Structure formats: C-alpha cells, structure tokens
Length: 273
Length: 273
Image (cartoon, one colour):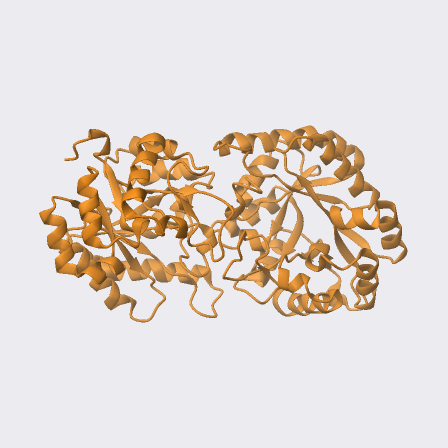
C-alpha cells in the first residue's frame, strides 16, 4: 500500500521513463510512494528477467502490466508471444498488452490483417490461460494503422476479443489513442459491460506531432484530453484496477526519471484522479 | 468532355499542384485532357476571383469544388464562410468543402466543439441555399482532431449533417482521412442512402508521417489505401460525380505541375478507376 491513499491506483508505466534503469526505477518508485509498475520487455531484458522479478518483489512493488506482445504479421510472432506470456508470468504481471502490428509488407488489405490479429490471439489463448496471464488488445490511434497497429478503435478491439472469454482476452484503454472518438463513451460502457477492461493507461494529446508521430505524447494535464472524464467513465463500468501513466516523448525521456515520475504523479493527482 | 473517356470523372484538386499558378494549371489541364478542377481559395485569391472564373470558363473547364470554408471556432467565421459561399457561386463551384477547425484555444471539450460545428453549419444553410452552393462537411483523419478538424469520422459528419436537407448539406469523402475506419464501408452505404455524398477525393496513405503530419499524403497508388474498393463503394451508392485527386506533400509540391498532373492521372487510371 502506498503511504498516500491518493496513489493507491497509480502505476508508473516504464515507457514514461524509458532511460531509467530498472533498479533506479524501483528505488525511485519506493521513494515517491509509488507501489505499482508497468514493465516493458526491452527494459526488463536489459536488466534481466529473473533479476527484475526478484527486485520488484523484494521492494514490495506490484507489476500491473507487461508491454508488449503482438505484431502478429511479423514472422516468428507465435514463439515471441509465447515467450512474452512466460515473461509476464515470471514477473507476476496479470496482463500482457498486445499491439497488433500494421499491414504486412506490400498489403493493402486491412480487413484481412484484422482477421489475422483475431485468429492469432485465439492461438495464444490456451497458453495465456495456462500461464494465468490475461491478454489485452490495445487499439492504437488511427495514425498508426498502416505500420504499427491495424486495430484503431475500442469498438474494433472489442469485436476481436468477442470470441474469447473475458478472463483470457480483454482490451487496453489508453486515452491517447482513443480520445478523438465520438463513440468512445458508448464503447467504454460496452467494454465494461462485456467485462473486457484489462488495463487503463493515460497520456495527453499535444501538437504539433513530431516526425514519425510515435514520440508525441504529453504528460497528464499538458494537452487537450478530458482525462478525468475518461477515468470517471472507466470507473463507472466497475473497473477498480490500476491507472498507468504511459508517455512516449523524447523531451520526457531525456530528463531525470525521478523528475518525470514526480510530474507524472502531479499530473495524475490534478487531472486524472 | 475529355477526349479520353476514362478521364470523364477525373478532377485535379488544385492542392495537389499548390505552386502551379492558375493560368498554367488551366492550360496544363487542357493539354492533358482534364476537364475538371477543384479550386482552393488562397490560390484563386492570388490569381483573382473574377479572372479565375473567366479563365476556367473560357477554357471549357468545370469547377468541381471550392476548398475550403469552415474553421468555425475562429473569430469571424461567419463572414468568412459567407464570402466563401459567394466565391463558390462566382466560380460556379457546386460544392464548398468545410473543414471544421479544431478545439478552441485552451478547451478540452470535444463534444461542445462538435455541437458548435453543427450549429454553425445551420447558420450558413440559408445563404448557401440562396447561392446554389452545397456545403460538404469533411471529416479529417483523427490525428487532426485537436488543431484542424474535430469531425473525425464519416459517421460523425453524417450525424452533424442530419438536421439539414441533403441538397444543402452533404459530406466530403476523402480516402486519406477515412481509410483506417473499420466502419467505413457501412458508413459509405449510409452516406449514399441518406443522399449526402457531395464530393469524393482520393489520396494515398504513406509513412513515415512528416513533422506536423499535414503534408504526408501520397499520390494514388503510392500507399496502402484500397482506392478502387473505395471508388466502387462510393459508386455503389449511386454517386456518379467527379473524383478529385487531392494530395498534400512537400515533395509533390516542389515538382513541375504538369509532371504531377500526369502522375495523378496515371495513378487514377491504374488504382482508382
């Protein structure tokens, strides 16, 4: 438990402090009263899987998600995703976030790519269930539809999850990717009613977008997303789980991790809670 | 009539050849058998409104659209949009394309901004009807939702058009903005059934997106959009009007207009028709 009850649901997604080594991140979280952490496979891999798991446990931290599996149109996706599930289990992460990948090289067939994603997830379900890891389909902003994630709306993510049990396959709700959708409030209610909300991540929308658009997110409160309205809508469905701050931005990454964590907390308290 | 019947529905949207002066554009279209042109207010303004209208008429060209009105959250929007309607009428453009504008400065209230757009269009309807100009609400890609256009889907554009007669208010279908939407085929059918398709524009989706994301479009065939499927879906609704090639890209703009027009035609014949 955090000393500050207002941080009870707060989780630092490690992408926000991408260049902060795992040991410093764990130490920094403890110092600032943060008890939950969303981990990334590349950062965990650098520090070592077992070493990360042991360190996080000994510090009393809870892992909220592992990011990420997916990229189902890349050769070797099946083995890689099975490894990701195993890593999530080793880290005691209850959720593995899946980013589907874009169109296969040279393809224009979005419908086929989306079917491929649905089928691929189905192939992973038995292993995920056996490992006790829930898969979370993450819809990414439509600007990533061709090269990173063909799943562009919460509605589409829910359709793809529908054939599988909610305990095995959920969705990841990320404000940065979904804020523009005029159907989002209806779809959040649907996600809740269908028992699919597996994780909730917050980041803010700021412009101008940088070249390549990947590293354009803002810390909570720096942009134009109705973050509190999102949090209230997610809560209204009965979701009581963690709320991760997950920001990708070169200017954020280039600053000291402890400063970024402090600002993430401040933005969370002021604009999300 | 074009000499080549395959170009009967082809229209060059002037944005594609942004730095080609109006007189050279008209001359270039005639030389390449293009009989239709979509005009932009800034380019027309540079050459002169009456002068453009006279030149286009004397060359036997048809104006398919005027781009653009809108930006309803900017002070002075009402007078500016009335002028845009008058300019469209002077150019004998049957359609004025509307880009709604983004969130007002400092606002996070997307719902309110969308209501503002709907109301503003209502205020323009009488003047548009009197001038014989149809207004076309253009949904822009969600990556423009905060700073350029709060209308992000065809579905939302149709909802906003719904209170007004289809003869007065339609929608602009642009492949670049809508290709990612898993609901697009259903919404195109709806747009047709509701009699709302006022214009149809094609551009291709290419990555990586440039900084600011405005100038990232590809000529038809250079990207991943199912352009022919779009054209067939639009045609299936009964739409028989012009098909504009409208591309924004610095590398396209920096090349000779005649070359870009030739490539636009080639891309249209190969990937759209």
